[in-house]
Length: 65
Image 1 (cartoon, rainbow, N blue to C red):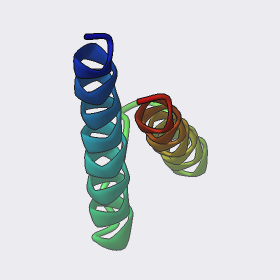
Image 2: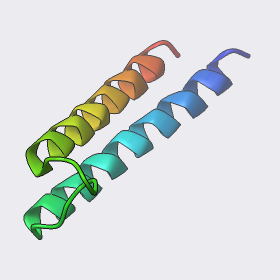
Image 3: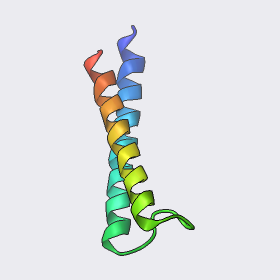
């Protein structure tokens, strides 16, 4: 009964993390800012870190099933 919410949360975190990493990589590759009004290097770094953390949390949730 508890595996349903863990699977849902794991998939949501994994999809968000993957989407954020793809979006960040696309913005950086085209030379577009990741966040307006912030250093391009800092915003890309923070966004990439958030994506990796979300993927890690998603993997952790899915291993708890």
